[in-house]
Length: 361
Image 1 (cartoon, rainbow, N blue to C red):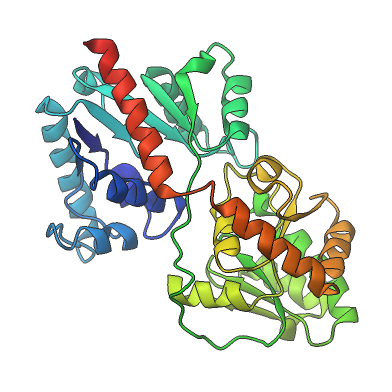
Image 2 (cartoon, helix red, strand yellow):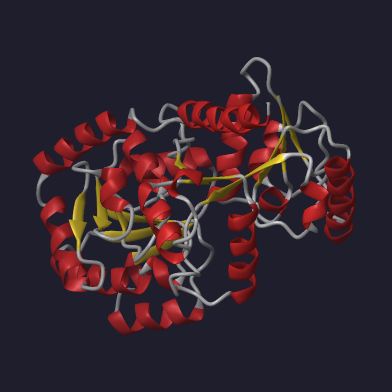
Protein backbone atom coordinates (compact mmCIF):
# COMPACT_ATOMS: atom_id res chain seq x y z
CA UNK A 1 0.00 0.00 0.00
CA UNK A 2 1.38 3.39 -0.98
CA UNK A 3 0.20 6.43 0.97
CA UNK A 4 0.96 10.06 0.16
CA UNK A 5 0.55 12.75 2.81
CA UNK A 6 0.01 16.19 1.30
CA UNK A 7 2.36 18.98 2.29
CA UNK A 8 0.08 21.79 3.44
CA UNK A 9 -0.39 20.69 7.05
CA UNK A 10 3.35 20.11 7.30
CA UNK A 11 4.58 23.28 5.66
CA UNK A 12 2.27 25.84 7.33
CA UNK A 13 3.32 24.98 10.89
CA UNK A 14 6.67 25.14 12.61
CA UNK A 15 5.11 23.65 15.73
CA UNK A 16 1.54 22.60 16.40
CA UNK A 17 -0.92 19.78 16.92
CA UNK A 18 -1.75 19.18 13.25
CA UNK A 19 1.82 18.59 12.08
CA UNK A 20 2.74 16.66 15.24
CA UNK A 21 -0.21 14.33 14.66
CA UNK A 22 0.84 13.51 11.11
CA UNK A 23 4.50 13.10 12.01
CA UNK A 24 3.65 10.64 14.77
CA UNK A 25 1.31 8.44 12.74
CA UNK A 26 3.74 8.42 9.79
CA UNK A 27 6.54 7.28 12.13
CA UNK A 28 4.33 4.45 13.42
CA UNK A 29 3.12 3.46 9.95
CA UNK A 30 6.66 3.35 8.61
CA UNK A 31 7.37 0.47 11.02
CA UNK A 32 4.46 -1.56 9.62
CA UNK A 33 4.94 -4.09 6.84
CA UNK A 34 3.56 -3.59 3.34
CA UNK A 35 2.98 0.14 3.67
CA UNK A 36 5.03 2.92 2.10
CA UNK A 37 4.54 6.50 3.29
CA UNK A 38 5.67 9.64 1.53
CA UNK A 39 5.06 13.39 1.87
CA UNK A 40 4.56 15.86 -0.98
CA UNK A 41 7.06 18.35 0.43
CA UNK A 42 10.72 18.86 -0.31
CA UNK A 43 11.13 21.94 1.88
CA UNK A 44 9.55 22.91 5.18
CA UNK A 45 10.22 24.70 8.45
CA UNK A 46 8.55 22.15 10.73
CA UNK A 47 10.33 20.97 13.85
CA UNK A 48 8.84 17.49 14.01
CA UNK A 49 9.33 16.58 10.35
CA UNK A 50 12.77 18.17 10.21
CA UNK A 51 13.90 15.83 12.98
CA UNK A 52 12.18 12.75 11.56
CA UNK A 53 13.24 13.21 7.93
CA UNK A 54 16.90 13.96 8.63
CA UNK A 55 17.76 10.37 7.78
CA UNK A 56 15.92 10.65 4.47
CA UNK A 57 17.78 13.85 3.66
CA UNK A 58 14.67 16.01 3.29
CA UNK A 59 16.19 19.47 3.25
CA UNK A 60 15.31 22.31 5.58
CA UNK A 61 14.67 25.32 3.35
CA UNK A 62 14.07 28.20 5.74
CA UNK A 63 16.18 30.98 4.12
CA UNK A 64 14.29 30.92 0.80
CA UNK A 65 10.89 29.96 2.15
CA UNK A 66 8.73 31.57 -0.58
CA UNK A 67 10.63 29.76 -3.29
CA UNK A 68 10.34 26.58 -1.24
CA UNK A 69 6.52 26.86 -1.27
CA UNK A 70 6.47 27.12 -5.06
CA UNK A 71 8.76 24.11 -5.37
CA UNK A 72 6.60 22.14 -2.92
CA UNK A 73 3.49 22.78 -5.02
CA UNK A 74 5.21 21.74 -8.23
CA UNK A 75 6.57 18.60 -6.56
CA UNK A 76 3.11 17.79 -5.16
CA UNK A 77 1.47 18.03 -8.59
CA UNK A 78 4.15 15.73 -10.02
CA UNK A 79 3.41 13.13 -7.33
CA UNK A 80 -0.38 13.42 -7.74
CA UNK A 81 -0.11 12.88 -11.49
CA UNK A 82 2.21 9.89 -11.08
CA UNK A 83 -0.74 7.69 -10.05
CA UNK A 84 1.61 5.77 -7.74
CA UNK A 85 -0.46 6.14 -4.58
CA UNK A 86 -3.37 4.05 -3.33
CA UNK A 87 -4.26 6.62 -0.67
CA UNK A 88 -3.80 10.37 -0.50
CA UNK A 89 -4.18 11.60 3.07
CA UNK A 90 -4.74 15.35 3.11
CA UNK A 91 -2.89 16.99 5.98
CA UNK A 92 -4.88 20.18 5.52
CA UNK A 93 -7.47 21.54 3.12
CA UNK A 94 -6.09 21.27 -0.40
CA UNK A 95 -5.59 24.01 -2.94
CA UNK A 96 -5.37 21.87 -6.08
CA UNK A 97 -7.99 21.07 -8.76
CA UNK A 98 -9.86 17.84 -8.09
CA UNK A 99 -8.88 16.22 -11.41
CA UNK A 100 -5.38 15.70 -9.99
CA UNK A 101 -6.68 13.26 -7.40
CA UNK A 102 -8.97 10.92 -9.34
CA UNK A 103 -6.76 7.83 -9.35
CA UNK A 104 -6.44 7.54 -5.55
CA UNK A 105 -8.71 7.18 -2.55
CA UNK A 106 -8.80 10.29 -0.39
CA UNK A 107 -8.78 10.67 3.38
CA UNK A 108 -9.07 13.92 5.33
CA UNK A 109 -8.55 14.33 9.09
CA UNK A 110 -10.84 16.90 10.73
CA UNK A 111 -9.31 18.19 13.95
CA UNK A 112 -12.12 20.54 14.98
CA UNK A 113 -14.99 22.66 13.69
CA UNK A 114 -13.88 25.88 15.36
CA UNK A 115 -14.54 28.37 12.50
CA UNK A 116 -17.84 26.70 11.52
CA UNK A 117 -19.08 27.11 15.10
CA UNK A 118 -18.28 30.82 15.06
CA UNK A 119 -15.23 30.97 17.33
CA UNK A 120 -13.42 32.92 14.63
CA UNK A 121 -14.34 34.11 11.13
CA UNK A 122 -12.47 32.56 8.21
CA UNK A 123 -14.81 32.14 5.24
CA UNK A 124 -12.07 30.93 2.90
CA UNK A 125 -11.06 28.17 5.31
CA UNK A 126 -14.69 27.10 5.81
CA UNK A 127 -15.27 26.87 2.04
CA UNK A 128 -12.08 24.87 1.39
CA UNK A 129 -12.76 22.59 4.34
CA UNK A 130 -16.34 21.93 3.24
CA UNK A 131 -15.14 21.01 -0.25
CA UNK A 132 -12.65 18.56 1.21
CA UNK A 133 -15.24 17.04 3.56
CA UNK A 134 -17.62 16.30 0.68
CA UNK A 135 -14.93 15.15 -1.77
CA UNK A 136 -13.12 12.81 0.61
CA UNK A 137 -13.73 9.08 0.37
CA UNK A 138 -13.41 8.90 4.14
CA UNK A 139 -13.12 11.31 7.07
CA UNK A 140 -11.17 10.78 10.27
CA UNK A 141 -12.47 12.78 13.26
CA UNK A 142 -10.27 13.13 16.32
CA UNK A 143 -13.15 12.77 18.81
CA UNK A 144 -16.81 11.76 18.96
CA UNK A 145 -17.54 15.42 19.72
CA UNK A 146 -15.87 16.49 16.46
CA UNK A 147 -17.79 13.81 14.54
CA UNK A 148 -21.09 15.03 15.99
CA UNK A 149 -20.20 18.62 15.07
CA UNK A 150 -19.44 17.60 11.46
CA UNK A 151 -22.77 15.77 11.18
CA UNK A 152 -24.66 18.65 12.80
CA UNK A 153 -23.17 21.22 10.42
CA UNK A 154 -23.33 18.94 7.35
CA UNK A 155 -26.29 16.59 8.06
CA UNK A 156 -26.22 15.01 4.58
CA UNK A 157 -22.78 13.48 5.24
CA UNK A 158 -23.28 9.76 6.00
CA UNK A 159 -22.25 8.86 9.55
CA UNK A 160 -20.48 5.78 8.22
CA UNK A 161 -18.13 7.99 6.22
CA UNK A 162 -16.54 9.20 9.48
CA UNK A 163 -14.27 7.19 11.77
CA UNK A 164 -13.21 8.51 15.17
CA UNK A 165 -9.51 7.98 15.91
CA UNK A 166 -8.04 9.53 19.03
CA UNK A 167 -4.64 11.18 19.33
CA UNK A 168 -1.69 9.98 21.38
CA UNK A 169 0.95 11.67 23.52
CA UNK A 170 4.43 12.54 22.22
CA UNK A 171 6.13 13.66 25.44
CA UNK A 172 8.53 11.25 27.11
CA UNK A 173 8.13 11.82 30.87
CA UNK A 174 11.59 10.37 31.52
CA UNK A 175 13.24 13.05 29.38
CA UNK A 176 13.14 16.55 30.83
CA UNK A 177 15.33 19.64 31.02
CA UNK A 178 15.15 22.03 33.93
CA UNK A 179 14.23 25.66 33.34
CA UNK A 180 13.84 28.57 35.76
CA UNK A 181 10.30 28.53 37.14
CA UNK A 182 8.50 29.75 40.29
CA UNK A 183 8.30 27.21 43.10
CA UNK A 184 4.48 27.19 43.14
CA UNK A 185 2.46 27.73 39.95
CA UNK A 186 -0.50 26.68 37.87
CA UNK A 187 0.11 26.04 34.19
CA UNK A 188 -1.46 27.12 30.90
CA UNK A 189 -0.07 25.68 27.65
CA UNK A 190 -0.34 26.81 24.03
CA UNK A 191 -1.97 29.55 22.00
CA UNK A 192 -4.17 32.17 23.60
CA UNK A 193 -6.75 32.95 20.92
CA UNK A 194 -10.20 34.10 22.01
CA UNK A 195 -11.77 30.61 22.13
CA UNK A 196 -8.92 29.50 24.41
CA UNK A 197 -10.63 31.56 27.14
CA UNK A 198 -7.34 32.88 28.49
CA UNK A 199 -8.80 36.22 29.59
CA UNK A 200 -11.14 34.51 32.07
CA UNK A 201 -8.21 32.49 33.37
CA UNK A 202 -6.42 35.77 34.13
CA UNK A 203 -9.43 36.96 36.15
CA UNK A 204 -9.62 33.61 37.94
CA UNK A 205 -5.92 33.74 38.75
CA UNK A 206 -6.20 37.31 40.06
CA UNK A 207 -8.80 36.00 42.52
CA UNK A 208 -6.50 33.14 43.55
CA UNK A 209 -3.49 35.45 43.86
CA UNK A 210 -5.20 37.27 46.73
CA UNK A 211 -5.29 34.07 48.81
CA UNK A 212 -1.99 32.54 47.70
CA UNK A 213 0.78 35.19 47.74
CA UNK A 214 3.35 32.67 46.52
CA UNK A 215 1.28 31.31 43.59
CA UNK A 216 2.17 32.12 39.96
CA UNK A 217 0.59 31.53 36.57
CA UNK A 218 3.04 30.08 34.04
CA UNK A 219 2.07 30.25 30.36
CA UNK A 220 4.18 27.90 28.21
CA UNK A 221 4.27 28.46 24.44
CA UNK A 222 1.95 30.67 22.45
CA UNK A 223 4.38 33.56 22.14
CA UNK A 224 5.01 36.65 24.21
CA UNK A 225 2.37 38.55 26.09
CA UNK A 226 0.47 40.80 23.68
CA UNK A 227 -0.75 44.33 24.34
CA UNK A 228 -4.34 43.36 25.15
CA UNK A 229 -3.21 40.69 27.61
CA UNK A 230 -0.76 43.10 29.22
CA UNK A 231 -3.51 45.65 29.76
CA UNK A 232 -5.65 43.08 31.58
CA UNK A 233 -2.72 41.82 33.63
CA UNK A 234 -1.83 45.38 34.65
CA UNK A 235 -5.43 46.21 35.49
CA UNK A 236 -5.65 43.13 37.72
CA UNK A 237 -2.36 43.96 39.42
CA UNK A 238 -0.72 40.60 38.69
CA UNK A 239 2.24 41.77 36.57
CA UNK A 240 4.78 40.09 38.82
CA UNK A 241 2.78 36.87 39.10
CA UNK A 242 2.33 35.85 35.43
CA UNK A 243 5.24 34.34 33.50
CA UNK A 244 5.39 33.69 29.74
CA UNK A 245 7.96 31.04 28.79
CA UNK A 246 8.75 28.79 25.86
CA UNK A 247 11.13 25.95 25.17
CA UNK A 248 11.66 22.40 23.99
CA UNK A 249 9.54 19.33 24.66
CA UNK A 250 11.97 18.36 27.41
CA UNK A 251 11.48 21.76 29.06
CA UNK A 252 7.71 21.45 28.63
CA UNK A 253 7.86 18.05 30.35
CA UNK A 254 9.69 19.61 33.29
CA UNK A 255 7.13 22.43 33.42
CA UNK A 256 4.17 20.01 33.54
CA UNK A 257 5.90 17.84 36.12
CA UNK A 258 6.40 20.67 38.60
CA UNK A 259 3.04 22.46 38.24
CA UNK A 260 0.37 22.29 40.93
CA UNK A 261 -2.08 21.70 38.12
CA UNK A 262 -2.62 22.25 34.41
CA UNK A 263 -5.61 24.44 33.52
CA UNK A 264 -7.33 24.13 30.12
CA UNK A 265 -10.13 26.73 30.03
CA UNK A 266 -11.01 26.54 26.30
CA UNK A 267 -14.56 27.13 25.10
CA UNK A 268 -14.01 24.54 22.37
CA UNK A 269 -11.35 22.02 21.31
CA UNK A 270 -11.43 19.15 18.86
CA UNK A 271 -9.36 16.88 21.11
CA UNK A 272 -6.85 18.45 23.53
CA UNK A 273 -3.39 16.83 23.38
CA UNK A 274 -2.15 18.84 26.44
CA UNK A 275 -4.50 16.73 28.58
CA UNK A 276 -2.53 13.61 27.63
CA UNK A 277 0.77 15.44 28.11
CA UNK A 278 -0.29 16.43 31.63
CA UNK A 279 -1.20 12.87 32.53
CA UNK A 280 2.10 11.57 31.16
CA UNK A 281 3.95 14.05 33.38
CA UNK A 282 1.79 13.32 36.45
CA UNK A 283 0.26 16.79 36.47
CA UNK A 284 -3.34 17.10 37.77
CA UNK A 285 -5.76 18.44 35.16
CA UNK A 286 -8.45 21.13 35.50
CA UNK A 287 -10.75 21.55 32.49
CA UNK A 288 -13.74 23.50 31.27
CA UNK A 289 -16.72 21.20 30.87
CA UNK A 290 -16.95 22.17 27.19
CA UNK A 291 -16.88 20.32 23.86
CA UNK A 292 -14.78 17.13 23.87
CA UNK A 293 -13.14 17.50 27.29
CA UNK A 294 -15.47 15.23 29.31
CA UNK A 295 -15.22 12.63 26.51
CA UNK A 296 -11.42 12.66 26.52
CA UNK A 297 -10.69 13.09 30.23
CA UNK A 298 -13.62 11.29 31.88
CA UNK A 299 -13.20 11.25 35.65
CA UNK A 300 -9.45 11.99 35.46
CA UNK A 301 -9.94 15.77 35.74
CA UNK A 302 -11.74 18.47 37.67
CA UNK A 303 -14.25 20.55 35.68
CA UNK A 304 -15.66 24.08 35.78
CA UNK A 305 -18.21 26.10 33.81
CA UNK A 306 -16.10 27.87 31.14
CA UNK A 307 -17.94 31.20 31.14
CA UNK A 308 -17.47 31.80 34.88
CA UNK A 309 -14.08 32.96 36.13
CA UNK A 310 -15.40 32.59 39.70
CA UNK A 311 -16.16 28.89 39.21
CA UNK A 312 -12.83 28.42 37.48
CA UNK A 313 -11.07 29.96 40.47
CA UNK A 314 -13.00 27.93 43.05
CA UNK A 315 -12.28 24.65 41.21
CA UNK A 316 -8.56 25.42 41.03
CA UNK A 317 -8.58 26.51 44.69
CA UNK A 318 -10.10 23.21 45.85
CA UNK A 319 -7.43 21.27 43.98
CA UNK A 320 -4.53 23.39 45.22
CA UNK A 321 -5.73 22.91 48.80
CA UNK A 322 -5.91 19.10 48.54
CA UNK A 323 -2.75 17.08 47.96
CA UNK A 324 -4.91 13.95 48.34
CA UNK A 325 -7.15 15.00 45.45
CA UNK A 326 -4.16 15.94 43.28
CA UNK A 327 -2.59 12.53 43.88
CA UNK A 328 -5.90 10.81 43.06
CA UNK A 329 -6.11 12.68 39.75
CA UNK A 330 -2.50 11.73 38.94
CA UNK A 331 -3.39 8.05 39.34
CA UNK A 332 -6.61 8.35 37.33
CA UNK A 333 -4.76 10.21 34.57
CA UNK A 334 -2.05 7.57 34.36
CA UNK A 335 -4.70 4.85 33.98
CA UNK A 336 -6.73 6.74 31.37
CA UNK A 337 -3.66 7.61 29.31
CA UNK A 338 -3.33 3.93 28.38
CA UNK A 339 -6.25 4.20 25.95
CA UNK A 340 -4.48 6.90 23.90
CA UNK A 341 -1.38 6.17 21.84
CA UNK A 342 0.02 7.04 18.42
CA UNK A 343 0.52 3.35 17.61
CA UNK A 344 -3.18 2.71 18.17
CA UNK A 345 -4.02 5.77 16.06
CA UNK A 346 -1.75 4.53 13.24
CA UNK A 347 -3.23 1.01 13.32
CA UNK A 348 -6.79 2.33 13.12
CA UNK A 349 -5.80 4.71 10.29
CA UNK A 350 -4.29 1.82 8.32
CA UNK A 351 -7.57 -0.07 8.83
CA UNK A 352 -9.41 2.87 7.26
CA UNK A 353 -7.02 2.79 4.28
CA UNK A 354 -7.46 -0.96 3.84
CA UNK A 355 -11.24 -0.71 3.90
CA UNK A 356 -11.14 1.93 1.12
CA UNK A 357 -8.80 -0.14 -1.03
CA UNK A 358 -10.89 -3.30 -0.56
CA UNK A 359 -13.95 -1.51 -1.92
CA UNK A 360 -12.17 -0.95 -5.24
CA UNK A 361 -11.01 -4.55 -5.64
